[in-house]
Length: 390
Length: 133
Image (cartoon, one colour):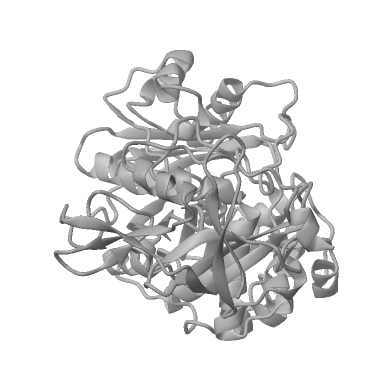
């Protein structure tokens, strides 16, 4: 049993706002849902499956959102593993559709950390209720930036990766963002700009970190029959994989991510290899995140990520692996501090041929979207989705 | 000097529960405990009532020597008081999250030998940290 070809992405929408001072989070969810329905040519009452990560709303947030949106569904899923949640949800929606549990699934993401003045990367965050590890971590002030920084520091030590190599990830993202009118940061930057930006948590500089933005996005998935009845280009999910990774009882190894497991699962289901991928959306919470995931997904040898991302190899029209052609989290947006959903959106645009002409990959028939939710420095969930243009 | 600043960072009290009460009682006496599984022999951290390797509940407390080496670290610069977070690999095997304290933050390196110290938390027990040996 496989999900290959059993579910299609029929509607997508990315909220244009990057600062939602005058909007609520539920309102943003509704607006992106409306946008994706319009893109698909469907109406709200067509939706019979709803996916909304628990962390995007307080309390039993998904139930509140089903109520708020006025949905009548026969399948719901509030899977939440942080920023990659939406990549897992694409896989789960494909499963639900393949099994007949729903026929048209809506996935929404929304948040407004920027309007709320959140210091996303640098402020240690205590959970609402203590988790089993809390006593052994909170006293040491783990924030987001210093957790990823520890992964970067070890990668540099073990493989000789340099700050300049990591900077190339940001440089490539900025080359793409210049063409995205909605991107928060549209100026093209250089390696020098990145390594000379203020140090946040050694070895990560300010420009190694993604933006803090408001907004959101939505995805609508449907059965092959429904997809073929609509007027949009046909994009189907052909493989998905998910894998948590953690501290392994104290056998801590920060040099790799769960992509070493989620990637092969997705590639095997899709029946394709890394060399077949024409475009990749790779979660870019930090530059190191991209570099490490590229290695773990098999786009290059382990430890060679620094060399691989250098010299524009991730820039569309220039390098071997065009990535995040919307500017990604590093330049475009990172709504709700979660970049997984927008990774799917740009991959779908590429497969449809609807990316900005300056960054559209020619003959883009197979694309990958991958993310890490949680933290590379402690525990995270990796998720890989492979899609194909029909 | 960075090391005097380190003293000023307010250290959050660890949440304590029935699983970890003994650990924090021992910390109050200047001891760092790990858990050893008598079924499979593995030492794990953070300590749990079930071995995360073989899932046996035949686990017992063991006092760590307090010696370790830095596996990785990062100095958080964008904080009221810069501080060094790290993973230290204990002589007993497991690697634990911690802070590196009482030193020049710019002199820390991976592979550096460190020794256990305890630092007071805000309204809680002292917490185990490390300083260059």
